[in-house]
Length: 234
Ligand code: UDP
Image 1 (spheres, helix red, strand yellow):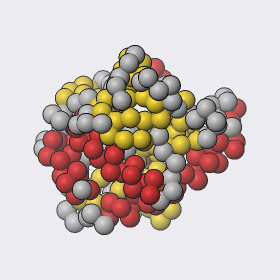
Image 2 (image 1 turned 90 degrees about the vertical axis):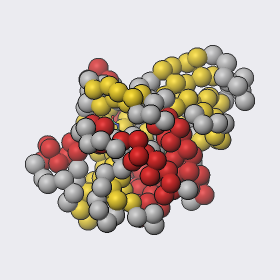
Image 3 (image 1 turned 90 degrees about the horizontal axis):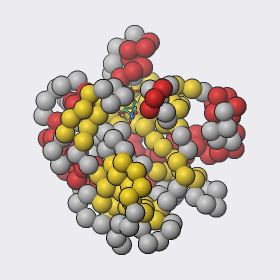
């Protein structure tokens, strides 16, 4: 399958149409951004690792019955995905307190939570992706109540599957961000990448960070963190 028309360039990926109207090709870049794109940089070969890590994770999720947009990886940086209409929400699930929540609530990063926390953010760069709740989503018609129920259910299932998948590889899934899209028949499926760009991943024993926080916080050893996640997932 080949790229035809260029569709869209995001912060970490480019999107192309293909000859099949139901399929797109996603190209993973090495560009990294943080803090609503105020910080920019390059993480060498990040696109290759995130493409391959996303493939492994999506295959695992599909094997557990989760509907996803992933079709196949084409090469180092490209994958074929089903074309969906993205629901403009970021669904974040947290198993430990970290990042923006640690800051907002002034709770020490790393505290484990008994019940996963689910947050919704409205995907709108110019607003800085503000946090909203389910009633905003329904009132603003970003999704229906029924869609939202499906999304919550899928998000919790995905978190449970991935928590186990990662811990079996000595990695703690601290939190993760998911996006969902709609197929022309109305079915809601998981879309976008799941990678160290979109999850917080800590080594089980040392709590060493193996994710984009190394870039956000200038912690060094960024490339080797992405490599290490890929190595452990293979
Ligand atoms: N996240 C993401 N994209 C975003 C915002 C957050 O992938 O635009 C991920 C982030 O990598 C982390 C989780 O969502 O794994 C929770 O992020 P948080 O709200 O703590 O925000 P951040 O610290 O990234 O500002």
